Amino acid sequence: TQLAGEAGMNIVGCSLVGCIAAMGGGTLNNLLYASSSPILGNAGVFWVRIPAYLATALGASIFTFFAWPLYCERQAEIEIKSMLPHDDND
Image (cartoon, rainbow, N blue to C red; front, side):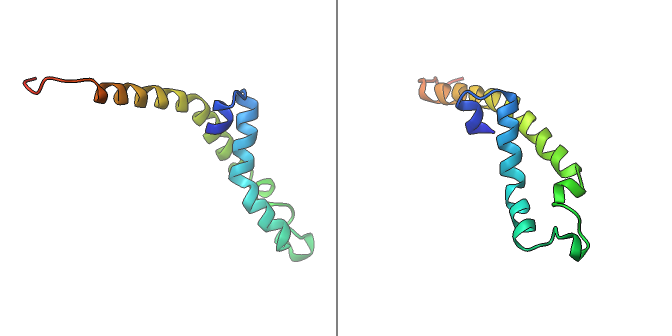
């Protein structure tokens, strides 16, 4: 989500990238090892069976989309202040 936002994507693109990054590995694992096979008793990948995973990833992506620029701005202010000369008597 951070890199997608810095690349100029909007909130939809950033959320999509964030959700793919968050759940892609588990989805691939479910598909490769047949844990999503209806024959074995599980129907669908984990985020389809339990949508709370998708909601959590989406919420984290949206939060990061808005919080990351604020964090970067604050870090830049701290960096600039640390480079400026300061009086030790204060």
